Amino acid sequence: MKKYGIFFLLMSLISLMALGQEKLFFKRGSERLEKKDFVNAAKDFAYVLQFNPQNDAAYFNRGFAYQQLGKHAEAVSDFSSAIDLRADNPDAYLHRSISKLGVNDAFGAMSDLNIAMQAHPRDPRIYRQRAKIKIALSDARGAINDYTQAMKLEPGNEDILFERIEARLSIRDYDGAVSDINEVIHKKPNDPSGYNVRATIKFQAGDTDGACLDWSYAGQIGDLSAYEKIKKYCK
Image 1 (spheres, rainbow, N blue to C red):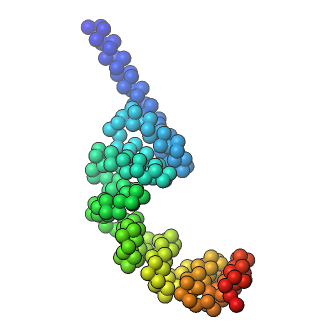
Image 2 (cartoon, rainbow, N blue to C red):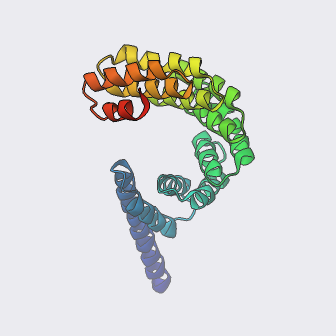
Image 3 (cartoon, helix red, strand yellow):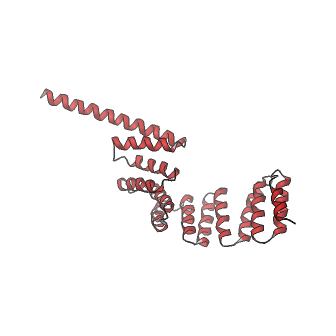
């Protein structure tokens, strides 16, 4: 009986040590994610999974690290494992959608996103991701609608606005693109970048005079490189 008692005691100690190591690597991996040290974060979560292959959060976090490193195939695999272990995690579907688009699986990306949207119908990230999928499927007008919805849910996010501008330009909606960039210029009248963008849009639309005036003003308020464009394009 003593032998069995010692055996179980040793097994308990080993289990406790493994649990401690799992928590240690998970904590360090999470800290490295926050610091955007994605390479080493992925390694830490790999160690976690060696101790506990049923840790869905470790699969999700390693998948996120892979996604940030552009390793979308690996990310899809990890997000799938996270979903297998916990099917009620909408963020796993959202991020798997992002990586599926990264491996050119637009239809699979849309399928995952629909599941995420059922759980979070007012999440601007979902509308933004759906817009990107629609762009990949050549549905720029649908993408513009989704970017508009995302901006309503997250007002003030200029990244979404610039993505909508790109979608407008893809269908030559120059008036809409100018209207969008005017919002940025209105908020930041002394930032030359807005005038540079508007100049580029006007130039693409065939309004060379308007473009040259915007480049001129961008140069006037600090962007001296705008004068190179004036030399090249303005007579």
